[in-house]
Image 1 (cartoon, rainbow, N blue to C red):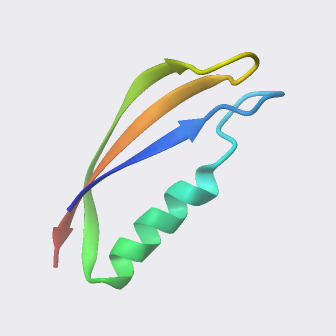
Image 2 (image 1 turned 90 degrees about the vertical axis):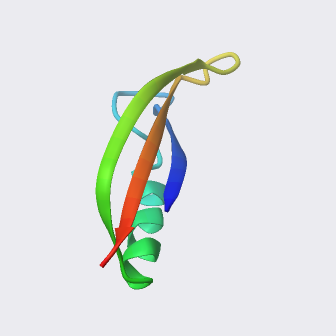
Length: 64
């Protein structure tokens, strides 16, 4: 299974504002009997005024 999650930088401060979404995606796949095999990231640029940077995380899961 290959999934992509967009991580959005917080408007104030550093770090991602939606790591809980990434955790949710991983936990959903684990509950289906998959494990995270590979994760890669790419800078997705910025969207709009004050929107912060976007990072595209691509996750590859394998069936246990």
